[in-house]
Image (tube, rainbow, N blue to C red; front, side, top):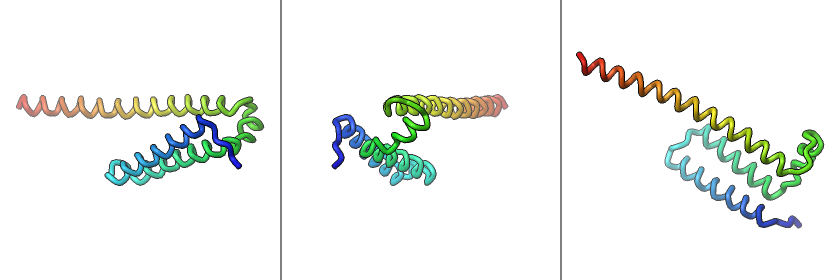
Length: 112
């Protein structure tokens, strides 16, 4: 029998909640199919890792030579956040350029 700790229960509840939120966004057509697949997969993987955290011990301890699973999750979390920050920066930069070009076009059209 699998013994579930309090932090695991919190992680399980979070993953289930995020699955529900992702479902709602998909249902309202605010997510594309690719986005939905990505987020559903991410939450299902998180749910699996919360239920059976020992499933990654070989990879964490054997391949990466880390002592604790939490070290792995912290490293992966930082990598994910840095990647997400870069992705957001690039999208904001593109939108900023589009807004700037639109404002210029409107100003030129108004001048005429």
